[in-house]
Length: 267
Image (cartoon, rainbow, N blue to C red; front, side):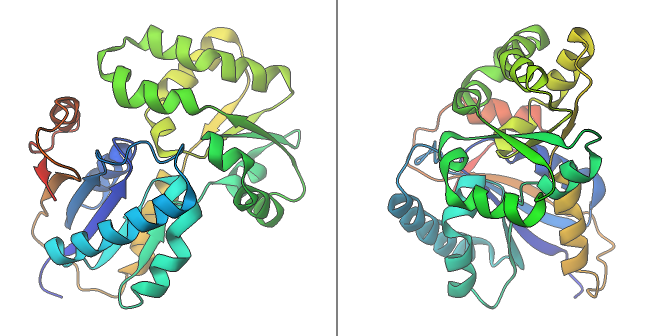
């Protein structure tokens, strides 16, 4: 392959931007297309049938617009509900879903008690039961639904100080610490934005807990998928797209600037 590998990254909103940032810094040879579903945000409060129908429509549009070599879903709710059906419908390209890094958290835990922070839907779904049984059967797993943090990240974080972000995450970290947890893993892409606040809160409050997200896992999976491709020696591009109808929420232009991306276009 003489051109850059084209990678579409899909999220319900701004949650996948830290993953894009990680890919930009680690794999400058990729053409990246970030797609935020402004029209359907948030996914964590919608029915499975609505989410599945929405994802099938978004995939058709992404493939027509970008002709990507792979598609990554960073929204955990979308992965939970639609990933397997999307893979069956698009067998000719890799469709990668972000995996909740419970296996990594279980391996890091010293006392055998970990927590997973999720959306309300994921916390109650059998999907999470299955992941826990598969990836963390030997440890105790505390589920912490934190749906309000999704809205905080999407709508408020851009205008919030680090102190405000610490205040937003502190009740959840206190609950985990008081429950004996020593390792927290993140089961929602939006929460990755809050890793610096979580780490600072643990430091300030004396919580001996580590926070684990899935950015390194995603990079490893992409490297595995394209390890046999000839590496492009040119720098790739990164574009930002929105699903919906004009006018766009001005927040997304601010998100684009925060992550050094071009002004969002319509998909």
